[in-house]
Image 1 (cartoon, rainbow, N blue to C red):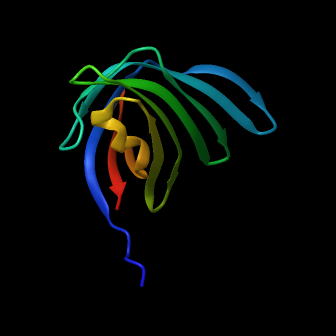
Image 2 (cartoon, rainbow, N blue to C red):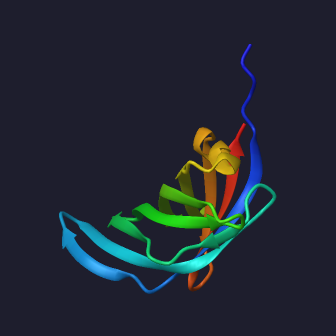
Amino acid sequence: MHAVPTLTYAFEIRAEVDPPLHIGHGSGEVTEFTPITGGTVRGPRLTGSVLAGGGDWSSTRGDVCQLEARYLLRADDGAVIDIVNRGYYTESGAGVYFRTAPVFRTDAAAHRWLTATVFVGLAHDDGGAIVIRCYSLD
């Protein structure tokens, strides 16, 4: 018998952002790039900072915005961790749906668990920052 998966809170990423840069329109789509300028990582499984220099590419079609962010984290022990975070954002009468699926890369032994874990991110816009609560799928 298979166990039912559970979600366990791991950490929260607070990615500070600049205003989005318009890239273009095409086939009913609006494409933008949002620069990531820094931030923090805090939680029971990981603490550190978000490094400046990454960003979030978004494509909006109708009411749905597809996101793909790529940036670096620096853990408090100095390890650098690459993150690719894909997801969706949409608003409806039921509220805001803003979910992501972060994937991590690092060769730091203390953080290799990130590379072998599936995560779900619950995100929200906090005026100048995107906040993503990351849960491991156990």
